[in-house]
Length: 389
Ligand code: F6P
Image (cartoon, rainbow, N blue to C red; front, side):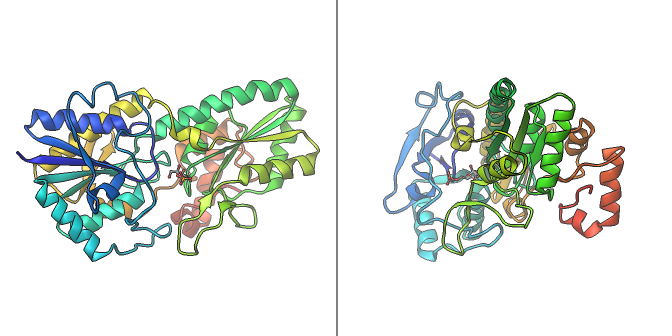
């Protein structure tokens, strides 16, 4: 009997189990058996580790965080060393994966992962291993899909944190800084900042300075509001352009971002003498049950991935092009990060409400101001870095 293989690779996120379940149930409808490889790509070779997946052992996992297959972002399979640098996989490793697939009669492999993991899937495809990709990441930074599953759940977690910080900040007249994940994209900070009533949102895509942040805090005080919520993306650049990392890594490896929240909080306290606290939300954003949106998206992704295999459309990644689930070439999906467009409607709406992006704000209509700035600095707009000054 022909089989479909499934694996989850890279950092986990809510909704992985929903994709697995969607893939398994739909592949059984089409008459396939399903196997799940353990610990991401590692389970594919030397030693090959997998388990049979069926209706029974994928029942009741729709709402569970984590992944029943395990995952890793370390080990022998690494195809990315920086934001966009491809590292070639070892040929023997690729040959080993091909043999495993042939021996197990794998018709197609569903690789569920973020940009690094999908870059590996792309190399599998180029080597003749039948793969399809499913985009996963809380960061929502994959081009070619409007949303990755996991993002909505991470935003819900960060929004809940802001709701909680709101009341304690107000009770103590404090400035609260919430650091959220997202790597080089500010999607989580932007969406949670809007949904959780943030006053200042700092993202990698909009250059900001401490004067801008402090200005907003003082403005609020003048309006009788003696507390402020600041949301900062872990990948936001400091005013001097630097980034804060939490551990040193080899020069050619992706930096482990984190720690900017404490830097921002300390500077606010020094400059304004206001009591300031920082919360680093960290991996809480990756745990727990997926939201309903992520369950629906992940289920559709799982079923669609199996359908791609059934139709023999390998080298493709499922994507969400609202309102439809479609597919694109994996190579197109991983070639460019999708970052926040500073002129997008969410940023404009936030500015219209008086939310500061730490860039000293704008006078008059923020919509017009951002558009004017884009027109004046088209190269920056093209690179996704323009902000109203
Ligand atoms: O890509 C998902 C992500 O959670 C990022 O937002 C974060 O920077 C990174 O992974 C954390 O990775 P790790 O789990 O290796 O600390």
